[in-house]
Structures are given as C-alpha cells and as structure tokens.
Length: 242
Figure 1 (cartoon, rainbow, N blue to C red):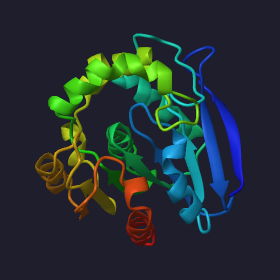
Figure 2: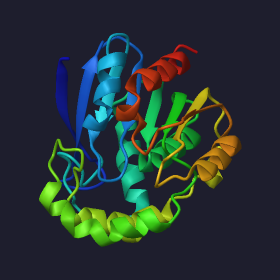
Figure 3: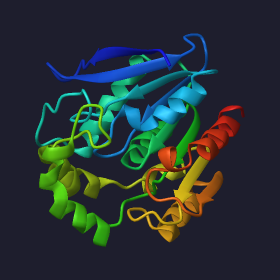
C-alpha cells in the first residue's frame, strides 16, 4: 500500500500542525478516518488497505498523538475538534467519516455541524459518552506507563502527559447528545459485546438515539478494526456504497 504523508499547518494556532496520511485513489470519493484517544492513524491500517482499492483514504493523527505535536498542555475537547474542523479547507466538498472511540465524538460533531459536507458516518466502538467505570479508573492508574510503550506509529501513540490530560480533562467533556438529532446521513455503528470501555448496553442506547445500522461483534472488545477487519471492512463497504 502506497501512502503519502502531509503536514497540515493550523491557521488558528501558530507553530501547530497535524500529521495526515493519505492512500488510495486521488480521484476517488474521500474517506476521513479519525482514531481514538492514545491511538494514531495506523489504527486503521486494515481499513486503509481494503478501502484504498476504491477510495481516497485520509487518516489524521490527532494533536499529541502519532506524529502530531502537543502544543497546548491545557487543550480542551474544543481544541481537538477545531483541529479536525480546520481540515475542511483541505478536504473535498463531500467526504465520508469513519471514527473510532473518542474519534467518534469528533466525527459526530463534525457531521452535525457541517451536514452538507459529510456523506456517511461510521462509528466504531463508541457512544454518546465514555463511562468512568472500573476500566477507565484502571487506565488512569496505568497512565505513567504510557511513556514506556508509546511510539509515533505504535498501538499506543501518546505519552503519559497527553494520556493523563485526556483521561483527567478532555474525555470527561465528551457528550454527543446535542448532535444526534442534527445528523441525517447514512450511518453505521459497530460495537463489541465484550468492550471494557464502551459497555454494550451503553453503546446500544447511544446507537438507537443516533439511528442507522447497528452491528455487534459477539467476541469484540474495543478495537474492532483489528479484531474483525474483514467483517468491519465489509460493513464499511456496504455503508459507503449507499
């Protein structure tokens, strides 16, 4: 798979930029992929390979993740969203969104705020919010360990400082409820029956509020893109063909 890397400079924040990876057909319909907290664009590698045969796939590293810098240690959820919104100047007039976990909040907000731009919305292992249950609290305790395993292209791609701020501040502002009623495009939710971060009942309630197709992986945890890539890719292909 041939990929092309770009540096997208922010117009609102000096010396801030995002790393963006692109693959597939330059003239095909564009699919924007938005990863979750502590991840990076390579979390979508199975989907980039599969969809790149037909689509132009654009995957972004959120601020403080992967190869994108962490310019503001007090970043809010609005800062993460504004970064994504700035990409609209670079994207075509119409594109689809595939988003995982925390990226689901960002993708949902983008689709609701710019209804004329987003063609399809696929949400993977996400919900209207993230419950602060036992798994969440365990992650807060384990946060210092991120410095030992994080790497720009690793499965964990954010350091301890970023992870601590995400769990302690940013993710607690995650609420998709105001946006659901504003979305009227073909949409898809994929949930994991064994997801430790997004409990199935919470994910199902959110999916019903959003509407659209809902699929559950009986043995799925929190990263369906890698746990069942063939099935997820098939569902995505079905959605994007609509």
